[in-house]
Length: 227
Image (cartoon, rainbow, N blue to C red; front, top):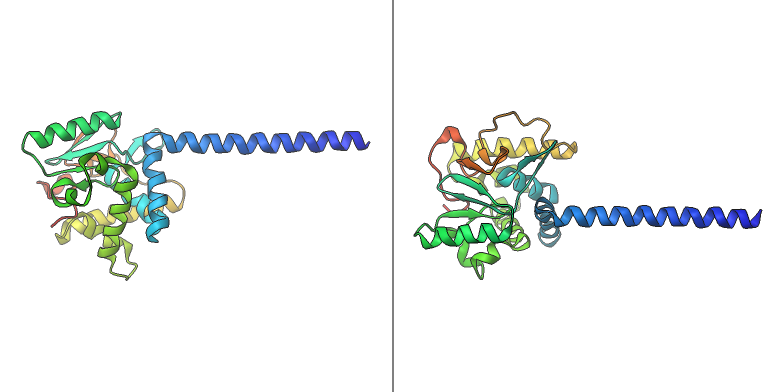
């Protein structure tokens, strides 16, 4: 009887260990894929700045969210140039495209999980490469969002200002952000997104016209968080 109890206990402990190991491996794999890099960076930036992680996650989804199967997830290797969004499978491809864009004389483009504009904010990074780093991108976005929040903890209004200083554009963006934030709380960040969101970076595919920087209905693009 004692031997049987010890055997059952040992099996239970082994099963528990294997379950914990599988969970850890799954979490590591998820954080290593491109969307997971943005999500993990948002978590770390939230911890450093006290901006709610749900706010940062929703901001990343509003900026670079892509429909990947049933989920809407952010994408770190995203660039928006002159209102056209580009997704790349790897960081190297995204950095090469950004470098070529810069060499062509175009310095106003948005990069990374949170679409930081190179012209207006590049000076705060050591290099263009650093701007693509999910952690650096997320931390800068969080700190900038704090300056827009001004201690009022109205993250919805801050998100609108993050997108644009033009009232109608900020409100349109804010409505999308609010919906994503609400759905995120339900565990379904894509459940209420219509087929056409008005923000092409939220659509499947490799490129989009307009990107999250400016909804299609509002026409020409404006620099992100820099005017």
